[in-house]
Image (cartoon, rainbow, N blue to C red):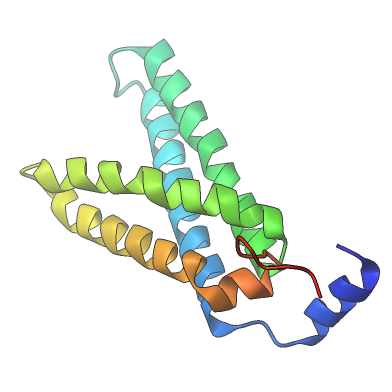
Length: 144
């Protein structure tokens, strides 16, 4: 992207859909990070039987939470690269939400929230206004 394209993109107001997509992606990132921190605290306080497994899972969740957090920041700043990680995060959240909905516990409301966030995020990210705001061209669309 040239500097003239970048400055013209930054001068136009950010579409509400792009702002919402960044917020939804950020919310999912914070949820993943919170789960990782909770697992970390649980493993360090001795509540889990397998310390190595619990620590590995906790660190993995924290690291995985940083990816959508970076994508949310990229969406906020209109970086075209950020759409891919955000879409992947929302797609991967769908089977997790499904598993949460299959549980007979307090995980069902969390599964509903996660499913709503994932579907909302996907709809917002494939919206033409969002794609245009990020400077992503559709197939067959030529540069003027």
